[in-house]
Length: 485
View (tube, rainbow, N blue to C red):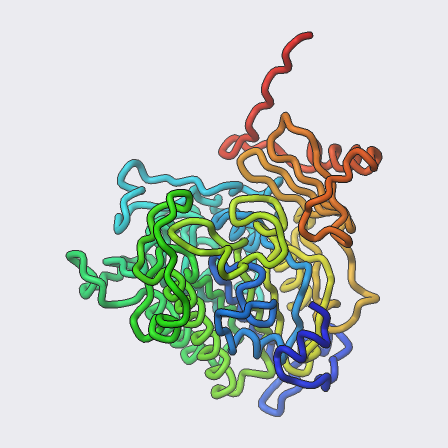
């Protein structure tokens, strides 16, 4: 979508705020209240597709508050998640390492058989180690209070991956992402302790977990309005299950015919699956609006960088009708794949007076850029061995200062993907051929050019082979032995 088309869709003109021109000015707030460090709010949707919000072309689901973020900030067209699935994507965000180097490279459950049971208090994912340098620890070292509200997925309470061992002062929500397959759990976690939800016990479904999470995030803002803070809000919406309160369902209930049972898609677990899914996204959008309204009410609006994005592409599971909503737009693939549809995501940054309002960027960025971006924002040095590159110059309108990636890399269960300039390489299994696409002409990855550009393929093969390190916990599947002729 071109910038003028986006602005037309959003209903605004081309007027924009002036961009502040130095990193030093970033550190000192131009407010009459005081010279304070900038706050950072990072809102992460779960399984939200590239084209599932209005400012990225969605026509059926209403997302006025996310769209307003884009009107007032910068919309990225070539932003990527850390991975095609939840836990490794979050790991790259926290650590600045892509999944060829990160500790977490897949959704790996721990906790024994009981850890797979919804509602279990001992379930969780493979933990990151205790001395991991995370973005939350970066903020803590800079004197910030830190809070995470939503879904964690990087280690259960009591392990080295416990969020409060990884730099967060406060956590509320789902420690185990498998438990997050229900929006009516009998418990969540709050600062290392079980938070029982009595109204949801014995199979009752009365309290919607997303509402509790949003309320706790707002409480964090109010409690820390006089301190610099980093607020991480990894919402669970719109990840399945398809569940939403009636007041959100009502907006869409009579809009579209409900799909009949389809053996290919499997069981549809909701009487109105399309309306439910749309209602979930719009309910999340409402809480984005609540966060933004509170920042303004507290006088923090102009001193807060807000980022909204998604952890990977749209899901295909649980009765979600991604085809009906055109959730990935013209991109190929969905969640779980290294095709563009599995990893290219909506990404919006807003900071009045610093990030140009109504602007658009085609800068190629990925989740592992968040840590070095925050480091530059705080005037600190990031670790030397990370894969990320600060995107702060792009946010501040200083394109001439922006460093570019030599390449981006993803892997998941034997799949590998590399983005290098306009080129994208995909290898679906270690023993399969490398496919090559020119994303500047073929965003849908339909025309394999590997046979025409052997020299590019050779460079990609080198990255696929040597641009990663081995992982005992997440080994690359072995290639099948070649048959002798």
